[in-house]
Length: 299
Image (cartoon, rainbow, N blue to C red):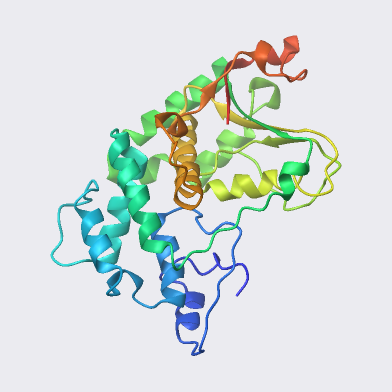
């Protein structure tokens, strides 16, 4: 089955239907096996090896990992798939102890080494190169006011929130926006392939990092003859900063899980801040761009 990440959600009809398929062999193919959550990977593994976490070969490793992770919601009796995957993800995203993260990654690799066969193609290494920036942009006074009003709305209790944020109030806010009043705004994605393009602008911060990776892949793909520049625009001093941080941590999980290097350090869990003068990008170096940029980071 190609596009094997599609049935990753446990409650979807497609996953339930695929679980009923009886065949001697099952092979699932995916270019982005890890999409958004650790649980989704194991939902897909259950397709090819039913009750994967409860297999005799899996149980010892699962028990060991449960003793190492930051347990989510307290310890459960027995081994529950969701408790295991949530605890693993919580550790990888939020635990400040790098040693514990490394133990968990090693455990995941040991657990899935005979079920997940990862191949990193080297065809992209032949392309001119990729510069992937996260551009934190200064908010304008208008944007700061809108964000403060929005955060104030979220601080009210649950009973009042429904009356505070309505479709009408959101539509009114959007109608009042003047594009000249802001450094970036909410946007649509188009799944097109353009190897003639050498600059990719990501306007939204996606909590599912594979969405952004696939957008970059529209330009950074075989046939590209130029160096590709990527700009992930982030509104500084807003909720987007936290979303961007979470998304980056999620990007690290499959990199370490599937491409593990024994030489990885805490630096693998951090973005690298760079000076615009050292960005090697003539577009970012222009005066018009510089005045809007608060901080620049590179992957």
